[in-house]
Length: 216
Image (tube, rainbow, N blue to C red):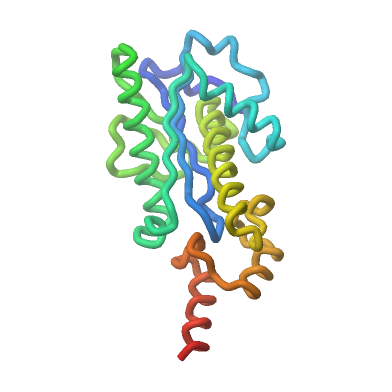
């Protein structure tokens, strides 16, 4: 279970950052940066964990709780046009830096003086981070701030995919969140590629190329 070891060992305002949706074939990638107010550490629920280990209903309730004061957060979603232009990894890193800037701005507006420090899930660091930062592999199972960020990011992206599913129900995004499941692949074979699919991803690119060859 994640804990506050990394947070309490730092004398800066610690911001946890995580993403949701780097691997799906459709929809945005979503990043959340989260600052847990140290004065509220003792009131945090004891089941904050890697978002993938939580049931959707509990994830939703925790996301709502973590988005309330005294916590500060910033969530950034990047659509498929940005992903296809920059690649999903670079897009994710860009969103991480943007989300960190958002939380730092909120800290300053709220009168919290002092430097910030970011804990970022995974092995990579954005080049343009606005504060000193540390990559934490499997960070959502180690840091409570990262785990909380993962919960908000996952719930936020799932909400987006549910809205997209209402307009494009054939692909089953409410269930598969845009991942390349068998049902999703079957829907693509029948209905083709939608505007919300990532054409830079090899399976989608091959479908687009095949459709172009057929039309010529």
